[in-house]
Structure formats: structure tokens, C-alpha cells
Length: 269
Image 1: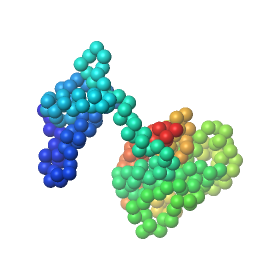
Image 2 (image 1 turned 90 degrees about the horizontal axis):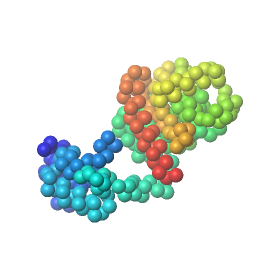
Image 3 (image 1 turned 120 degrees about the vertical axis):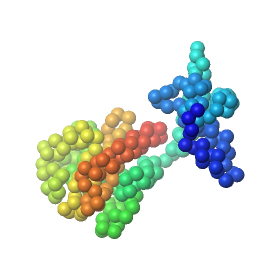
Image 4 (image 1 turned 135 degrees about the vertical axis):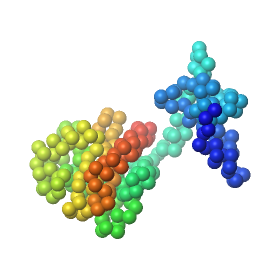
């Protein structure tokens, strides 16, 4: 039986307040994945790193509680929808900012820079949440409530790329196009070309190395119709992070966190 990395922690834990059997029960639940939604008992045991007897007792307990169910006509088990109730309870009655805060904290932990959430207000992006880890030292003063032109920013371009055409047209009519940086479009036509690239790549990048010393990568937060309701970004000092490095380090976690926030918003409704 393969050794589960948690075994050492469970076996060696000195805290008598830990309930190791509860932890093993969660390992059984986590054995079921999108790739393997139905498992035989010995497959559950292998995935959870547990012996056959313990797995048998835990599966029967979870079965009686309604968290797993037998697959008819087989000897396999599957998760029920009951585990979703725990997640729904955690995010119920929370607004966008509340939902985004742990997402942004997770981004800062993964890329060790600043992370922000912005929403569109007419032709501007308004920052509604921000978590940072040291950018104050280089004089960057972006706070909750700060406003920047949507067309000139990564976070704005990520959001605009997934707006319905009438809404995008309204933003373009209200925007001033000034080439204030290398990734800032000078015309509406240039912006539309850039937004097509954002949709292709899934992220927007603005390089402000020569202006305020930052590189910013952003991704949209989409609703169930695939339209942007917000965007999240990560910023890195240009003196420590090249364009290639911020994409390599931040793109995957940024997209993962935007999907996480999308699912949370969908659950809240």
C-alpha cells in the first residue's frame, strides 16, 4: 500500500486534541476526483493510503451519513452531493469582496507579490480588494477605492475582453486613448486587437517598468454566461521579474484562482 504523505503527520502528532480517525475520513472523501468519480473499496484504500479494514469501516460510516453512495449494479462507490452543502454553507451570504479576499491571499502566497480585485465603473476600474506583500517599499500607492482607466490597465483589459459588445462599445466611447505605456493602446482599434489576444491567452499583461516599475498580469472573473463581472491581477516589481518570469510564475495560479472565484460566485447565485 503506498504511503500517504499525511501518515507521518498523523502518526507523529503530539497534540492529543487531534481526531485522527476524522482526518482519515476526509482522506476517503478526497480519494474521489473528477478523473475517478467511482471507486472500488481497494481503490479508495490505495488513494487514501489506508488499510482495507479501516477503509471498509469509514466507507460504511460515510454511507450511513449520506456522503457516499453505492453505484447501482457495481461494487463501486461515489460521492453524493451532500459534501457540497459544506462548501455552500461556507460561502452563503457573502459578497464579491468577501469571497475574493482568501483568493487574493492565496495568490500572494503563490507568487509572493501583490494581488488585486477590480470591477468596472463606467470607463474605469475600481479596486475593491487588495492584498500586498511589500510593494509599499517601492512607492506604489494603489488602495481599495483607487480608480484607473480600464483601457490602460491589465486588470481593465482582462475584464473588457469578456464584456458583451454593447457594454464594450459604451466603455470605448467614454474612454480617452493615451499611449502612456508600452502595452497601452492608442486607439479603439488597437484595443480591440489587444482584447482578442487576451481572449486567446486568457490573461492580460501590462509592462509599466519605465513608468512605475511594475509588471501586472490579470485574468477575468466570469459569470455563468462567460461574461466578465470582475478581474483579478498580480503585480511584480520589474527590477526582480521579467515579462517571461511573471507569466511563468503567475499565469497558472492566476487562472486557477479566477476559476475558483467564478465557482464561488455561481454557488452564491
